[in-house]
View 1 (cartoon, rainbow, N blue to C red):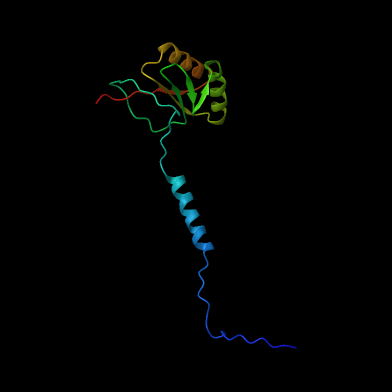
View 2: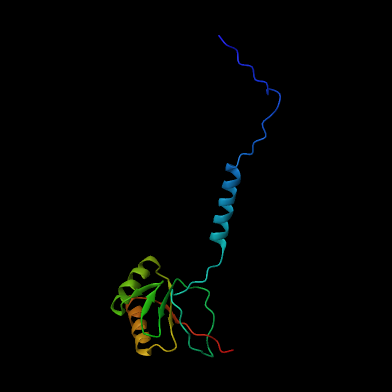
Length: 136
């Protein structure tokens, strides 16, 4: 039977365990993601109309964007106007007191904006706003 002799028996190994450090970094990352304020966007760039009575709303669950070529976007996805009511019905099932903001481009046709507003009301949306900017 052989005997193994450890020459470094007296010296302690100085290794740093990285697992708790990585866990703490991920916990902090999750904390900042959950507690941060996020600005909701429609997913498209629109030039908003100017209105004297424009006011900032703190609650927004979904934004419908209407571009200058009258294309409708819901959360960054292009949607046909005939599908708006269906999307809003599904939205209201998940969020009964949901807030909807229509963000039309200032050069879009008002007929499209009114049609989208009609479909939102038909779907049962109670809290509906149209986005505009305050004049400078």
